[in-house]
Length: 122
Ligand code: HEM
Image (cartoon, rainbow, N blue to C red; front, side, top):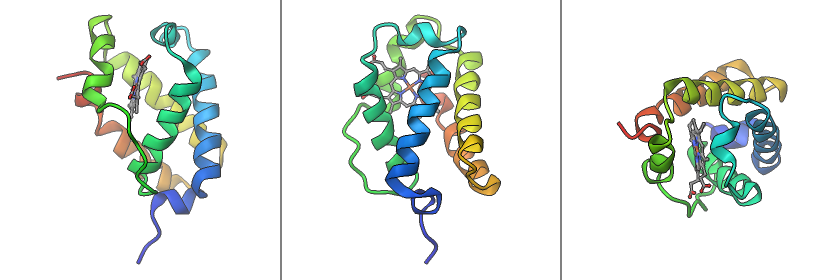
């Protein structure tokens, strides 16, 4: 059996590092940072860690909202495709900085791209 992507990238340690670097990038990007003005970022990091763990095939401990519900208020505030791809770009750069192999990055970015309709509520 093939290991899950979660195991292949290095498990909990790798996800923890990735999420921390990812949010540093997101919060330094003027195009999107304001969406997080009222967000408790410690809670957000934890939710994102358990969400990523789940979608990468690790242990499923995600108890957050589904993506459609979680982002509906942001769509009301103007969240659009440009914002989505900016966030996706930060994820891709994060994985590259962590030297995740390119074929795994491609798979992960495919998973991320597949959430666009839910995130944008369309
Ligand atoms: C790959 C696409 C995305 C995924 C997988 C994702 C995932 C998540 C998850 C798992 C949560 C937690 C849900 C909960 O509160 O229970 C969340 C919340 C949130 N997301 Fe995303 N997200 C994505 C794209 C975006 C984009 C493009 C933005 C804005 C530029 C964004 C901004 C936010 C904000 C501000 C919250 C927290 C709202 C609050 O304060 O409670 N997300 N997202």
